[in-house]
Image (cartoon, rainbow, N blue to C red; front, side):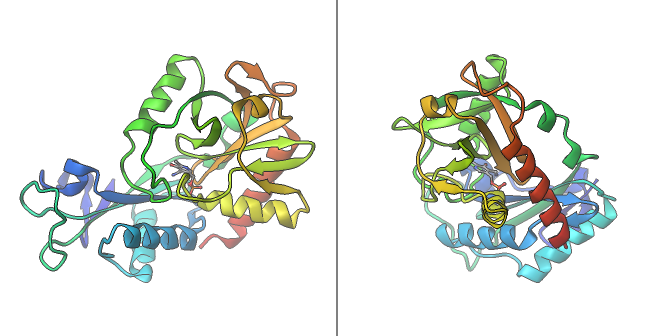
Length: 285
Ligand code: PMP
């Protein structure tokens, strides 16, 4: 695989980052994951805008302009011959050459910019979408700025392990009795045809897929309500699903052992997945 590191395209084994990099020592970095379908980028602009916002919120320097980032994404898709897959981008505050809690001077410490690709043939035909996911709920003990897409992913990673251990596929995080989001996706329930999902705030990541899916839902005259919901309400829902750039719309069929409806992906989730993929492919660049 060819990867990108600070201005260079390199074989992955030759791309090296300092042990003093603040991403490595302090999780002082942000990231984006953009999916590739048919060799084209899905919602690149949305991801680039959110990246810019994450950088601004953390007072981090932007290492490359929008057009350069687009070019790097496209070049990696080309050289790695990605038909379907993912592009991972990470920016850290760089390597000041020592460990210090104080941010390094941005005049002398350049951010680290890394991109690599993941080949996922048939990404949009994921058989999991036909089966639906089993979810467990766990307490949300993450920090208070979940709207910033940082590389601080230890708790989401632990959540996935807890789900795996419980024989489930993923976990939903619960704070003050309400679902915030999934470990790496936004969470939704459907009741009497209405799509319910938590409103945007600092409590959740502002999913790029969430924005697109809600747009699709409204265009298709589906009713959307942005509000908190509990696990008990979710267990009584007709359907549930999650959204993310890599899973698109993924149905949920079980929550903490309670089967939803008939225990198979519901019509709203299935339809949204179809519309979302169709619309995104049309706009892919
Ligand atoms: N919430 C969290 C915590 C996530 O990690 C992700 C995926 N990175 C999402 C939501 C979904 O965001 P997106 O649709 O932009 O991938």
